[in-house]
Figure 1 (spheres, one colour):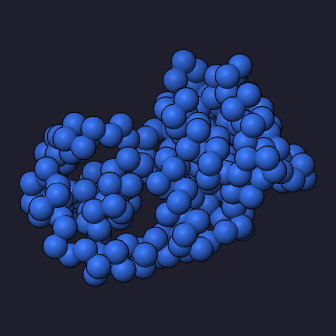
Figure 2: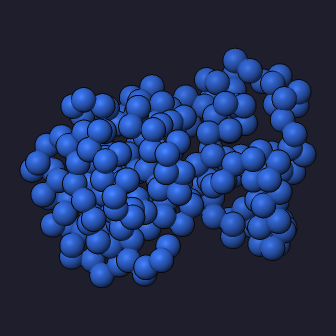
Length: 218
């Protein structure tokens, strides 16, 4: 980023939600709202004109919904992070948003502290999911794993240790937690993470989670 403040675009088709979110974010010293959009077309229009770090993305919007908009945002503006903020907690919506490129997924009943934590996490390239979303996602991944248990060894370029590290990354473990669980140093975890990113040709944690979903590594 070229500024110390995190630049956020709010995308939601309900004005009262946009106003409420702006009121919350304006009270923080490290976040500024750089725009509001009521649908996906406005999101893309604003991004073409305004430097943005994070888009808070609703799923149900007017002319272009959040899932399709997320896909277009990541294609045209790969450095912009998308954080879903929605009422939908169904597995299909969660997985579709992650596959589209979202770095995190929050429900609209989330608290202010969690919202701010999620924004700060995704702007650093990490992923963030609310607890109920994480539980739903893990349940979905368990189903995928049972259907494709033979696929990992055949299709992945990762070593057995790298698969272990990736599995823990997808479960939202920090580098310190991964090091503790695998009895290795944090520096070694960093090395594994860089190697995994290079082998899979992805840029951030969201890309790693998407790969873990596709390959049923969790």
